[in-house]
Image 1 (cartoon, rainbow, N blue to C red):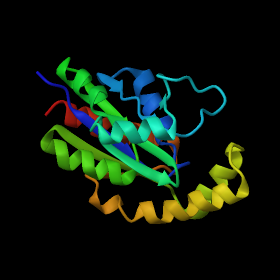
Image 2: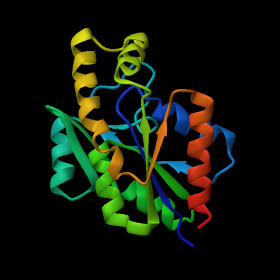
Image 3: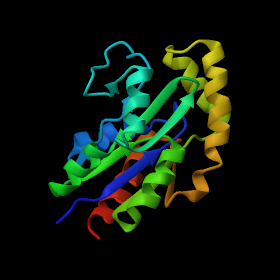
Image 4: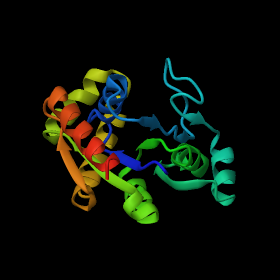
Length: 189
């Protein structure tokens, strides 16, 4: 039996990676992480092939032309993110569920392509002001980049109604429990 596809999207800083990592650490659901590709530079501590497949912009564009992504997005000029088709197919064909941590437009595209084999979960910030505070506390981005991310977040939130489920991350433990239940229920269908 094939595995299922779980898409989790959120604006940057909403805790989606933290939620996914906690669910995987708990081990209550058979869930494998899909490693996305990106043309951005690795952040401190990130490992190629573990956190992302880090590609140059040229390499990324070549793989787009070769049809190697199930979805991709140029999130910022010259900064691409995408999901290699091989990452999904290999995991679901082995009978495991795969979780994709991807951009909101990409999430909609994956759901369209895979239909009932996929479900989508949107992680919502409690407010845009709280999102800004979280991004500032990360200490990884300049004030200009934070402004850009918050502006993009406001746009991305408009996609939430197109997702199967919306989880507001105003309390991390509650958001983890809600998200894990959605995934477990879907995986059992």
